[in-house]
Figure 1 (cartoon, one colour):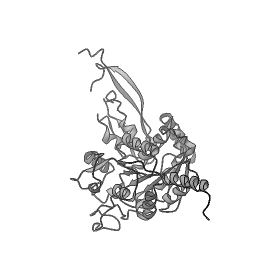
Figure 2 (cartoon, rainbow over the protein chains, first blue to last red):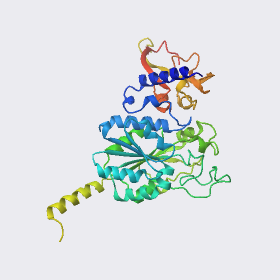
Figure 3 (tube, rainbow over the protein chains, first blue to last red):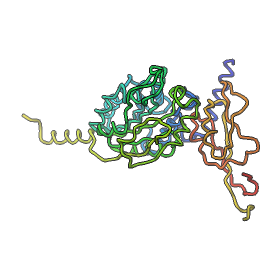
Figure 4 (cartoon, rainbow over the protein chains, first blue to last red):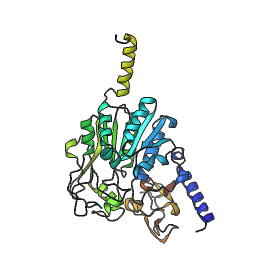
Length: 296
Length: 89
């Protein structure tokens, strides 16, 4: 293919995108399409859902900030036409906390994979949840470290075959909603990309919510699927369609993921409570102390 | 039933073959089974979806394919109300 052909191809791609995404092109960088994600990956759908939620949220686009760490999901905010920060591995939540404290007007959204947020950045995640910072965290759970070639991580279900566990994985995985609940998160939801409308609704609730909001998105991953029971691109989404059970009142202790063909996969908006955020409490503290005057 | 008066929505799809990565989500999730893989490939070697022969009027405009497409390659261009008699499903 000559270079002029490639240029024409790219031009075609952009015009055909903008025709449909008349609204979304304010938020999605259509000139960078087609994106880098694998065929069969759920991240393209999540990107579309997040862009739609940002447009519908009623918050001006210049007040939205995206923060991401390393990994496949770390590339997602780069495709959004908002301020986006790409930081060191696992430190996305820590960076977002600083950003929110420096300017409480911002709507800070962390988009990270399971390896980024609950494995390497696990400590930042639980402590930001404990202090109830007013930030949003989207955890894209694909059960594996996809970008580095398919090593097992903290959310890989027991018995899975990966590059580093060729005879079957022996560890127990994290149950992310229960972990978030125990750490003190005040909004917890779990959806899959094929529940598109519900996912966009969960993002909107997350933007509206004051407090630490966690949305876990269970994404299909080709790299996980090809070594396990999902060899073709559509097998994992077919499994989600057949086995997902929507239960908003589910017992968080019983919704761990095993990806067993007989076990249901429980999804829903599990938990929502209003508690004073760290930013509000700190503002109150500053007002009280400045009224009383400094201690002797 | 008066099939001349009864109007049913029919969707017309626009597919951009060059954006497609051939994941097959749209084919899997189409409730009316309107789409299939093409024999032809695009410039990156992927088989893209095409509308099955004889099913041009069968799309019910649910919009699932455009929601589920990760590569923004398929969308509902327009929805028309057409008398039910002309639409054979």
